[in-house]
Image (cartoon, rainbow, N blue to C red; front, side):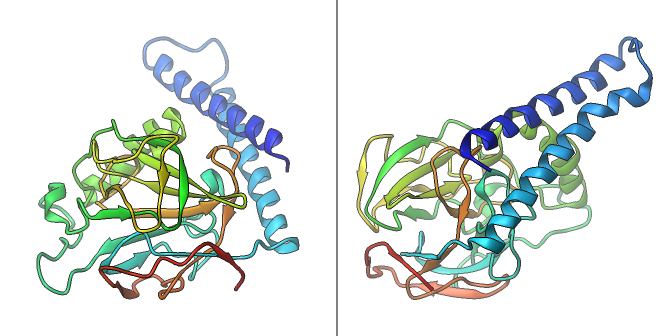
Length: 284
C-alpha cells in the first residue's frame, strides 16, 4: 500500500470513529432518526479499514522484510523491556502509527527507588515521581536532524490499579484515539537519521525537550526527559524506527541497539553512562 493510500486510510478510519462516537453522544440526548444497528456501521467500517491496512503490512513483512538498523540505545543505566519486537511482531499488537517494531522500556535501577507494582484497588494511581524512569534523559541514537518536537501535553498520573486500567482503556483510550496520533504518542520528538530512517521517542516529559524542529543533534546528546504523556500507563520510554516522519503513513523499521541488541520482554539490560556512539548501520 502506497503512502498516499495509507494517508487516506488513516483519515477515513479517524473520520469513521468520530462519526461512531458522535452518534453515541447525540443518542444520549435525542433519538437517532434511523435504526440503532445502523449506528454501528461506522465502527465496523473503521475496523475493516484497520484490517486491510494490517493485512498490507503483514504481506510486506513476509515478502520484503526490512533490514534491521543498528543505532545506539536511547538511554543509559539499568532498564527492562516491555512490549518488545523480540517477543512478537507487531510488538504492540498493531501496525498503526508505525509501531510494528516499537519497544517500551522502564527504569530498573540497581540502587534507589523501585517502580510501584500494579494493584487491584488501592492506591488508584501513583504520582510520576514514584517511578525511576520519570525524568530520565533521552539520548539521540545517532547523528540526526530533528524534524518534529513537541512537549506541551501534560504528564498524567499512572494507571496502576484496576480502576485506572479500566479508565485507560474505556474512556481515555477512546478520547486519545479520536484526538489523533499526537494524542496517542503524547509529547514526542522525531529524528531524521538519514538513509530514509526516522526515530520516534514518545511520552516525553512536558517542557523537557532541549531541541526543536530543524536542530542538528549528535549521537548521545540529551534530547529531553522520559515522561508520562499520551497513551501511557506509567512513565516509560517508547522508542521506534520508521521509514518516514508522518505517523499516519510511516511503516515500522526493525532496530538493534549497539551493545544490547533487542531486549526481550522482562529482560534487564544496562547501558554504560558514556556509551560509544557508532554511526547508523544496517543489517542483522
